[in-house]
Image (cartoon, rainbow, N blue to C red; front, side, top):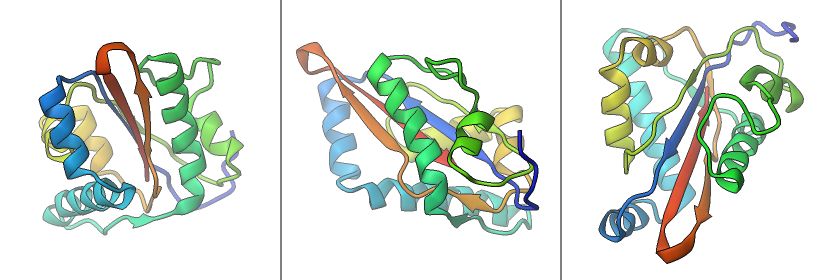
Length: 162
């Protein structure tokens, strides 16, 4: 693990499991473009941080590679875990993306259909809340992959790195 940077990295992995057609339609309408949900998540994270007197996180596109890699892996292999299908850890994925960091955390959620539900769940969980309100500075910019399955079932996997 490389610890060459003074920047701190915070990783949030969001994995939304299968939902019925009505909820999928609502979700697709809500998140017509990547920038829709990325902006909403960044805004909600920063609102929670501001309420505690913490600095806002800013987007970092370099972290997207590590986040997207894990989202793609989860979608391709239909699983949700902090460990990749190749046994990679979040810290390994971040280092493999050539991002220098000195701290990493990860939140994983399943079943929520939008940013509001995911954030509400996390803020009501001590460990997840601690990660969101941690001493971090950066956030990735494109955290989503989708697995389409039989009978119009779909699973969204979102990875948001800070």
